[in-house]
Length: 331
Image (cartoon, rainbow, N blue to C red):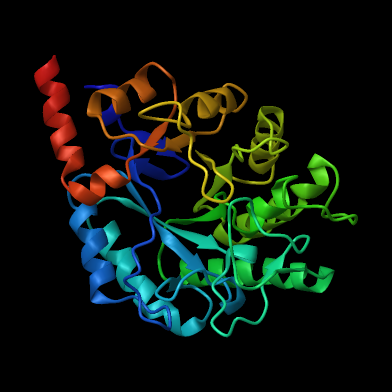
């Protein structure tokens, strides 16, 4: 058996192989954020082809954290029924079902062009908005923490096997973690420890909610800009997240639209490998992974635990089956 198709147990959850569908926005929800038949069909079409796990696209935790018009919502109790239908359809295929939770911060979608929240009242690099964000108060930060808790409770009620905290791609938690967008002078800004404080508090809070289920964190490990997050920053944050209850670190990067561009495939793999060398918990990586042979190498030779196959799954829902056949034929 190739490394890509070896099962792996994390807590009480058995992943049948190492292939995960990472969270990718599909814009198939209603304008109220309700799950639609299109959402269910989209995930079922891919989960049934042999995925070990599915991380469902980001659901907003509050209306002021919504990022797009047809984004999924976990912000209200009336969303639980639809989320339950989605979780069940994924789990019935044998895949582990995870819901990603997010607050957009300065990258949120403002219907009425009123106000956007951010750590310090600045936009992410390379991002344009008609509305200038304002600095959050301590009360608003506390509300975000409460909203993450409530959204996680809804995900648990809906039957998901876990949740993933979105801390990458220039959204709110990434904005707090990064020195590019966090200039606060209180306990949530300044030092690396203070900038990461909100992420660590959210992780600790959600660990209490998920209990024996899974807690993931999508870590924006590089900003891709000068004076942004450093490798020591990323390693330190990852270690602290694990200490605060995170079960799987999902490595990504890019603050404000940046993507690693020096490699044709796996542009975050070297960063993920360095983080993995400093952790005992599982590490996942995504980012341009499309070749079955390369995906197998990421597990077998680089020592990572899971690969996120994204765009390749959009064009080929049967990618896991195709990958297995290709790797068998190479032997």
